[in-house]
Image (cartoon, rainbow, N blue to C red; front, side):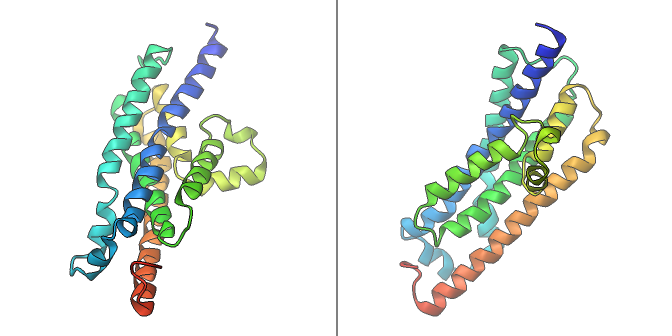
Length: 215
């Protein structure tokens, strides 16, 4: 394989390995939140005296671990089909995988809260998942995207994680990608905060209207 072909393979393998985290984050977290209403347990959850933030954030915990495991498997498979990790910064890559999972789970929490009032949860999930696949740079070079797509990509999770992972696979020090990872983490927290606000709004409206089970 030529140097150019090798670099191209690295580009796609790393991007798609990181993209795997979106499966657990979007589908797993969203369904975990929305299933509370579908299974009839939302009324007990809202009626309990437990800390709302702890309950809400706890919905993402196991999906974060599951997402990380999925990415690790993706890298292992990538190694079998041509991904070269001999120069990789493995500790930095591990941190990147953790942050990417947290960040995308923040988006999943927001989508899960929105799904409490949505008629078709899977339509929302599928739409966001494929938008991430396009806009995150997993399969497209960000600098070759139209300007408006580049603007959108900056506000999405995974974009900076994928950039960081590609740099770390090539041996970049963690300090070189620290700003990208800090921004990625902040974006994930921002999505989670919006989701929590929406969750509390849903709770308030449901209590007000008496529609906890039929919102």
